[in-house]
Image (cartoon, rainbow, N blue to C red):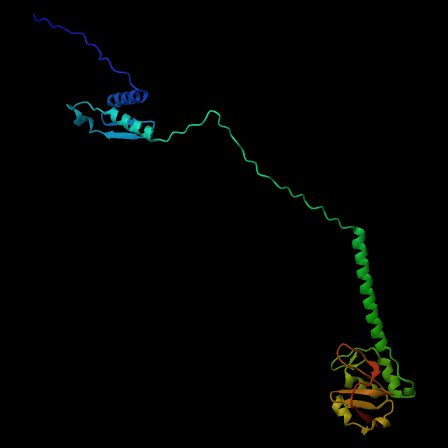
Length: 261
């Protein structure tokens, strides 16, 4: 029988490792034990190293996977050495800049007194009423002009004056509305005289006389318009759109006077 001598095994005494080196060594040991297919080392600098291995079936008979941890430790030390060092003095003091803030007060509210507003409205109404009254008075003064005394006794003027205030209506020949020749033909029809409908035809319906010969009830013709002479320097007619039958001064510069009958 042969005798086998077993010798005691002792662990090798290892030098002290820095914390990072110890972490790397531990990581290497764990990676080798957990899988032969890959290894990873994660360092505090953010470096991740992955080493791929062949399938397990191809690793049979091969040497165990080893990682040189010292290489990663050296790279880490170099990164730390290259990093800038910030040192703050022990008596360092913090300071804070404060900007000046300008505050603008809100404007005072505008108060509109109801009394002032009411007074303003009253003034506006008064002015409007005054203007309307003046306009109405002017119109009434224009339409209420009476025939001169020299027209007294003229049947034509007496009938014509009944229609003072009737509005001008283009083509009108009734008291609902007259145009110039419609008015003269209607008035003369009341005294039994038939006149043509247009002013041009009415000019040729009588005898042309001088102004000095003219008497109330004669016609006054100008191109495009005809009126009835009322004596003195006055005539009665239907003037134009927007106006009414009225007595007014003779405005024509060179009118033609025509006596009918």
